Image 1 (cartoon, helix red, strand yellow):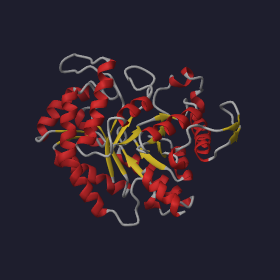
Image 2 (spheres, helix red, strand yellow):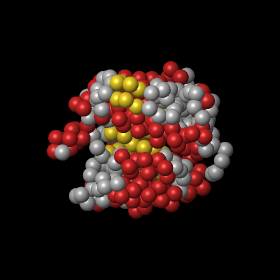
Image 3 (spheres, one colour):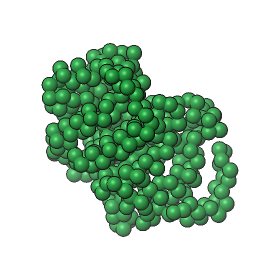
Image 4 (cartoon, helix red, strand yellow):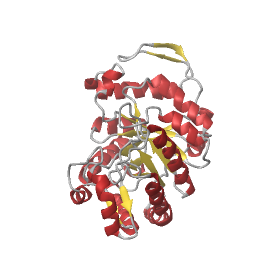
Length: 359
């Protein structure tokens, strides 16, 4: 099972000091955070895509390529690549290039994002969000698997005798996760292609995540990719830790109360009760995370959100130290012991190459 972190790339004031980092500082900090994730033994670093303030990550592949040059084992991914407003041709080219530069340490998570104005900014209609996601991915899937593509659709100009370059490394396309909070059509799309399905798992109650993943597993089996429990599932999560749980709550509360997404809304206590947010000791994080398996089954990737809401770099690095030393080793052992032998690991470039050889 893979463990890692994801960032939404917010540039937010620290509510305890009133200081707001510059974009330059946050960009440098995210590189430091990713490198430290590898140093403490995590598997994955994922970065979101946004085209509006207060976020900086408008070009995640650029940042991930820079991180790839300074790491050796870290799997690089996106927390969202906007399949609706990006050109599928450019996605195909950018991620194939990143594949080569990182020696295959890359996959991506496709999504529609949560910023409505991004659609007209890129010449799209938000009312066509689902059809855009379906058509654009159909083209992306083809571009990575066919050398010469002739294609015509509704939302972009036709392609005639087009070859996307560079070609995928070793002729193995990057693995794709389809991310969605609330759209069953995206779970269906992931199942149709036999791709992964990633549930954000940040804002919604467990019952909602359970229904979405159950649908994906059922449809994955329907399309002949394997048994339902062999479907490739990833979950998000959000934690803040201290050795003492009371200290964790005390330190995190002002950041929670002023967070750009859920600040000035539900109380910290209500949010931790109704969603997977865990604020407490490392043992509480272990227990809560192990409990995810009770309602989604065995899954392949767990990513934690740890660098948001104005938390200073020093605090984020301390959180990573706790995650790498006290939490993830226990989670690895426990999840591996519970997982049946026929349930696969998360796909990697090496495992997909082997699968292609064996086919």
